[in-house]
Length: 90
Image (tube, rainbow, N blue to C red; front, side):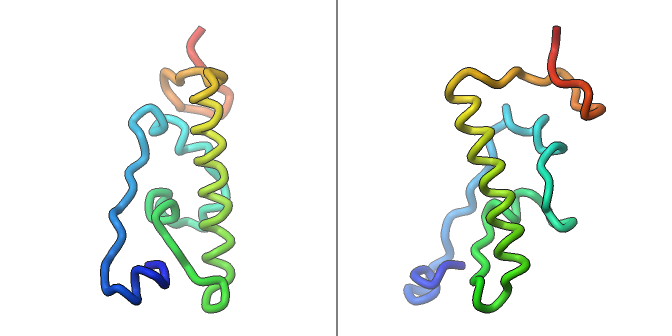
């Protein structure tokens, strides 16, 4: 929870990843074994938990990159992400 939300006593709404992004989640690195959606929605304070905050920043940057590639039309849709070599339908 962010500091502003903590001061107000409110919990921010949980952000959900879009359905088109689901096949790409297997390629997201640096999660530390944590759930990707939890990392996307996490707001760890670097003063209190620097390792978790760093992992959350890494996951968020990868998700933002996927969103920008998708918006620009530069991302091929995956049929089945069964292996890292399966990068899209032919």
